Amino acid sequence: MKCRIIGVLRKDAVGNSMNDNVEQISKVPASTRTGLGAVVETLRIPHWIKNVFVAAPILFSNRFDDPQAWGMCILAVAAFCLLSSAIYLINDIADRKSDQTHPVKKDRPVASGRLSPLVAAIAAVVLLAGGMGIVAHLCRKLYQPGMPLAGMGLAVWAGAYMLINLAYNLGLKGKPILDVIIVAMGFVLRAMAGAAVIAVVISPWLVVCTFMLCLFIALAKRRSEIIALGDSAGDTRRVHGFYTLANLDHMLSVSAGLAILTYSLYCLAPATVARIGSSHMIWTIPLVVYGMFRYYCLTLSAGGGDPVRVLLRDKVLWLVGAAWLGCVIVVLRWGADDAVRGLLLQ
Image (cartoon, rainbow, N blue to C red; front, top):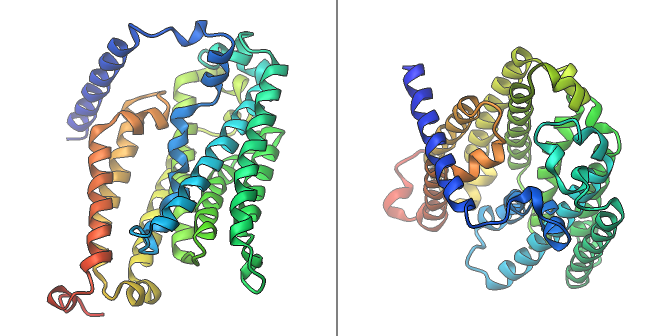
C-alpha cells in the first residue's frame, strides 16, 4: 500500500515537472538573467507565500468581513514580503562562497557572479527601508497609550523577525536544531505581527501550533537537502554533518504529532469555544491531518525537491487548503446557530 501511494505521488511529481518544463520554454533561463532580472530572481518571490501567516489572525479573529482590517493586513503582508526578500539578499551575500560548491545554489545570481554583492547589498537596504517604512506608517495609526506595547506590536514583532533572521544568516544557521527553531520562530513572529496590526490577541495554542507546524516544514526541508546532496551535504551546510535521515525522521514525527495535537487543543480550548459559540472547529482537524500527512509523503517521494516547490505544485494540497479555509469560515459564520450548536456538548 505504501509503495502504491509513493508511486502515485511520484507520478504526480513527474506530471508537474513536465508542465513546468513546458512553461519555461518561452522564458529566459534563470541562469542567464543579469541586472534587474537577477535582482528579481534573488527576491525569491514564490517564497512570499510564507507571509500568508501574517494574514492568519484576521481569519481566526472572525474579522474577515472587515475591509479596514483587511487593508491593514495587506499592508503588513507587503511589508513582510519586502523584509523577507531583503533577508534572502543578505543570505546570498553571506553564503556566496559556500553556495558555489552547491549543485543547485551555485546558479544563484550572487554565487554565479551575475549579481555583484554591492548591488545585492544596495537592493537589500532599499527593501529594508521600504518594509520598515510600511511598518512605521501602520504603527502611526496603531499607536495608543495604555494598549499592550502601546499599539506598537507590529514594529516589535517585525524588528524581532529581522534580528533573528540576521543572526541566523550571520552564524546561527550553522547550529544544529537551533537553525530549524529560528526558522519556525520566523513564522510565529509573522503571525504575532498579523495579530498586532489588527489589534487582536492571539491564542497561545495557535502560537504553539504555528511553531510546531513550521518546525515540521523546516525539518522536512533539511531532510530533502540531505537526500539531494548525499555525501557532500556536510560540505555545503555545516548542520548537515549533524543531521541524519534517522534523527530527522524522529523529529519530523514528533513535530507533526505536536502540531496536530496543539491545533486540536486550540479548537477545543474554552476561549475558542466561547468566542465562536460552539465546538464545531473540530471538523477542521481531519483536513489538517490529511494535509500534513500528504505533505510529508510528497517530500519523501520528491527526494531532494524543495518542500516549498512541492507545496506550490501539488493541486491536492491546494484543494485541501481551500476546503480547510471554507470549513473554518462556515464554522465561524454559522457554527453558533441554534440549528447546529447543540450537536456537540459545549
